[in-house]
Image 1 (tube, rainbow, N blue to C red):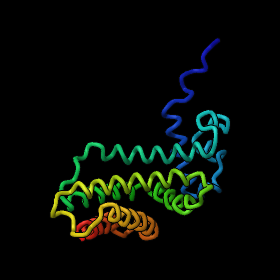
Image 2: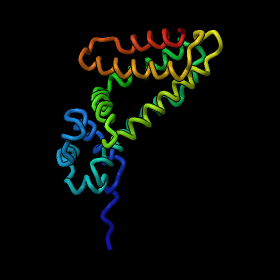
Image 3: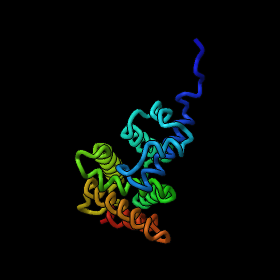
Image 4: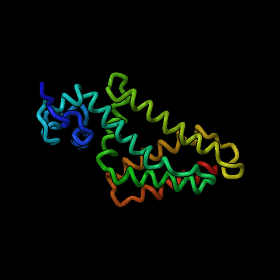
Length: 195
């Protein structure tokens, strides 16, 4: 029996679907999005898309995972910061990357609200994402040498505060494109970490 070809399941096709889904989910939200529209945007039939992603939730998870992987990859080669200023630079650079990905910021904003509902498909992902990001940031703060962290600053609390500030500033930046979000985040990191 002849093979159907190597085109099925190719990374390029999956990437095209994920890109189309990101655009659709960020524009209309997860609930209002149509898998058929995503398929058409990606240049596939509805059954063709379902071959790669059997459910809408699987597609959402693929979008979120792809974005998280890209975030991790962007900073994998960076050395651990050794000063509060270096930490502020790394965090603000990450925010600058996110800021350019408007669709991703829109999607995260929508999912932050929807993910607060325990029965929403993004709930578990949102919780894991916040815990991972806060844990990583707290670890970086805790690893700073004495004198770089303000007296009484608790790394986990500082990370939670900074994560909330970052998410809020990114959302505000959607409404105010000229807002210097990376600069404000850098300032927030320095103030929170140094006490």
